[in-house]
Image (cartoon, rainbow, N blue to C red):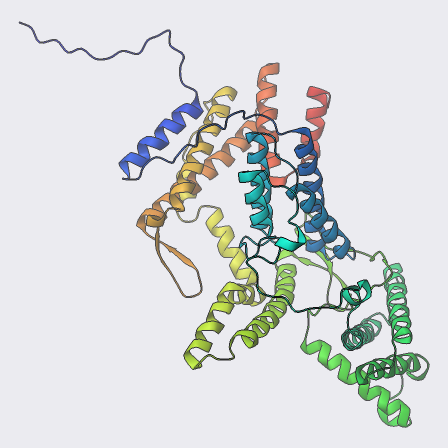
Length: 520
């Protein structure tokens, strides 16, 4: 009897699986081979769909307020307090929005978790009125109203009794106000001394704008010192410093030395030298936080994509145009000073009853959490750090030459588009492997991750897939479409790549092509 081998055949009429379906199947198979279970796919929520109109409006309002707050914080704009307050109000409105379906709950949970896990939030629910606790009750039990006053003390430590009058709540103590004003006067006077010395020979319009801003700041501080009640030693010191600054305007002469002044002039010179010396030692410290006229600065941090230069103002207000690495080093210096001050504050608050070893461990932990070593490296070795990162990005680990061997010339436009999608899927797959625990060999005391052999292999494949994807973009951008369909394929892929890299269309030629092709 002859031996026959029957093999299963695919039904030719059955629909072929899409690239995404094949990617998901390949991912599950790879997980089985690696000894790891496939990632759990949560079931589709019942009634899933679009969120309700009320929740969608609350989400949109908070997203806009959140973006404005982050932008204002990143660029140090003067309305930071107002923007953060607006974001907090929008978030509280979203937090107490009633949820009507599973789609509402999913969108609500994603928005709350995203906000609390980043710079403006705190993910640890330490009290009943914490946003994470409120969100849990809203999702689980539909309790969206704020807790009654008589229940908010449950589970909390007893709070100290305070004066419930609005004036006592809003107004700070007179001593605190005087100390804050004294610090503002010292920093602003020293900053203006340095800036005026630099602008003495500068007659440009920018120098005039800076001078107008400084006069407005000085007048605001003088008015605050005048209104401050002289009821404490700190208040008297603040008023005396404001008087000395006002008198120095008429007394100081650029062509005189200290010995050429009388007693009042010598006291003024000693004050000015002391203030400018302290400001130089504390470079990067924020200037006056007092409410000031919302003057528009002459220029702000601006990055030129063609030259790679950044125009910014340093601590003294001087406008400079320098390479991006130097600007990052300058910003890292300011952040390094703030981080060290914060480390000192936290260390002094926690080290009271600790022995020497515990104090050393506490200092090491705070240094690691505040990334002080990383900021120090950016301050003094920013060029080296960016050169090494650029070298690795360009594939100098071997991924670059490997990616360059892929021949893209014979492929059609449609084949290039499909191949780009496949390499993107491969890149994301290897990116997930890099993040797995078995890809990490160890972490050093500074928190740096050192990859295992599997991690190095996965990183190589991820870099290679990313570089091939960029080569496909370059190749398809040089193709001339033969049909309208090919033109749409090329523009769609280039548009996706531009948005992914730049968050908006910066290429004027691409915008012109899109307008001509699609009438946008």
